[in-house]
Image (tube, rainbow, N blue to C red):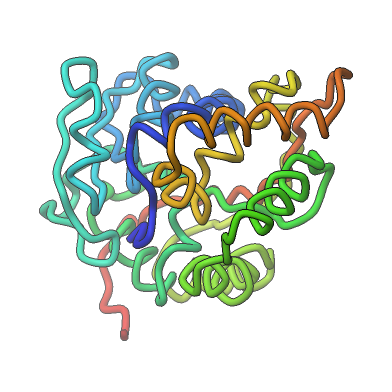
Length: 266
């Protein structure tokens, strides 16, 4: 889960703000099912979804494959466990609800992750799974930053290309999401598309977001500090001074854990 992700410092410098805005928009719509419950934040990263859960009265428990991500600003974080999303280190029915935000595209077997989510969520508990839809309005910052990086020798990593070109399209397809949810034993699955304005529109913030994102952050971090500052300045200048809202489309799967356990074939 989340193999290839960057350092927590790079993540929190830009992407974390975007993911918190996205998580807040989704969680708010299901707040009544989450309030007062122990909620698994699967693929928690640096805590964007955990903060959104706390804001609506949920009691998050974080699981992520990266100890470094979970340890980031640990004093302000909920209880956390290092673990694989396809083999969650929790007993059956351990939580009242689960939110798996932006993690399904990081595993080779997304149905296995959905089975695990159903196992650890109490019967009838709400399960929310969020993926990118691969459509919608996109800021030009990605193209601008990548062009500047290529001029400095950057090449998109193989693991990132695999995720974007092979794994992400599978979980962006609503019909395939519904089929996987039903096959995994989840009940009454519904997939909707949410268009979310992240509130990030300032060129400086947009560049911070992209430079801290998967696929580029480790390359940027290895650059000398002066070169990083030059890169940031060039990217901001290329974007121009105008506001450019970052609006993203999400696929949101909402379902329930089975009320009666049954054997689900692997």
